[in-house]
Length: 211
Image (cartoon, rainbow, N blue to C red; front, side, top):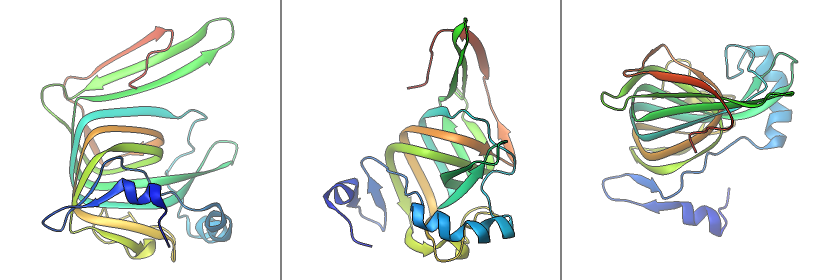
């Protein structure tokens, strides 16, 4: 698949076999591929989240994320109304995040905006294993080692054991990933283990978001 000028601006080659992205744009599955492969995905149970996602996306930011065993591919989430939501799944075997923030804003009748705001990892990093994030937007400065771009999503083998997508769809994987100034909007997060040091959570009126 060819790249336009904007795509080229997102990628720049780096030494030691690494690829850096000034602004890391997540590669989502094309609408045509979603339609064509949806029947297969439903039949095989190859949907992203293992639960029905809520009707709200949430925001996540971090000063930095480092991980080993990185994979990324397109998939589909399903909500409680059986509506289909295209997502880009980022899967990492082992990850550490510094200065993690998560926020979601709910607008209620009469009351108005209510914000849930969570922080962790200000001192000791947040640790996660078999981390899956189903996102619609991601940005930051990223560096990879031994990256493979354009691999068939069904053949991924560097991420967690279940980190594979549908056959013939675009995917990428790498031995390691490092992202600074991480910003993402997501529908769901799954993890085998998730250790949040220095956890702080509060609910307040008004709009309070990570970014």
